[in-house]
Length: 75
Image (cartoon, rainbow, N blue to C red; front, top):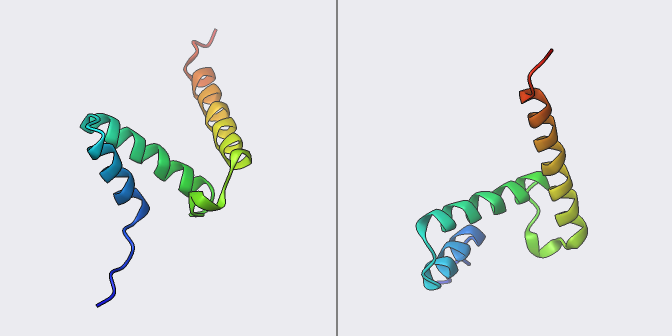
């Protein structure tokens, strides 16, 4: 019987576990990786490089700026 390859996020969890990182670190890393994948329409990270990482981080920065400006007191 042929075994299916393990899903990426399961592999990430396994490596983090093997390195004895905390559960909170594991959860945080998995959330960020999931966001990255969803941002790029579910493309596998192996298909992407620095350009896609830059796009994702730029989008996160713009989102954060928008949130901060919304939270500023209005006069």
